[in-house]
Image (cartoon, rainbow, N blue to C red; front, side, top):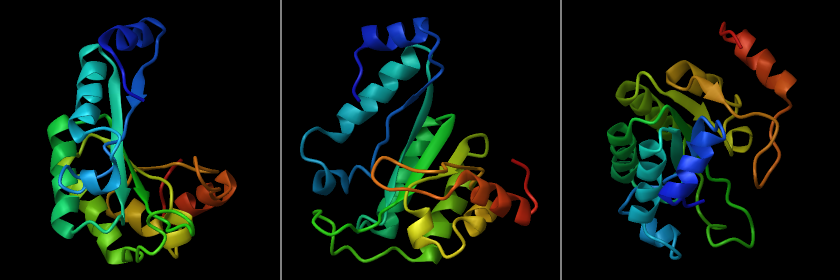
Length: 178
């Protein structure tokens, strides 16, 4: 959610280390996706959290119908912010939602954005999050080899995920440590 400076400072006092607040998409795509607040509102919350001394976790959703240029726009905004952690979700079109007819983003495009993020943010944790089990045939092996160095496992806000044991097996299979 959104923060005031006082709330952010209170979180810091309570020993909260990192605050998650996703940008959702690029500035140019944002008005098509969200009508309740502005992109600048989201940026302001991140600035408030950082000013209070909190580390940042932010990212977005890919596959919303954005262009490759808009994905790069999001990546460059993340590079400007330099968050400690980036979370990238992959849209799964769900019947009955506004994006139910959205075509699925291609696996090569998904791999490209993770590679670009790794290039731009070599010191950030870049996590694969929601949608990977439904969209990726390998549940993330390719992304862990192309730039991601973190995953969220066992479930998300709107859908289930892989069992953590399955993800650990995948990580070991490609020669990484968990």
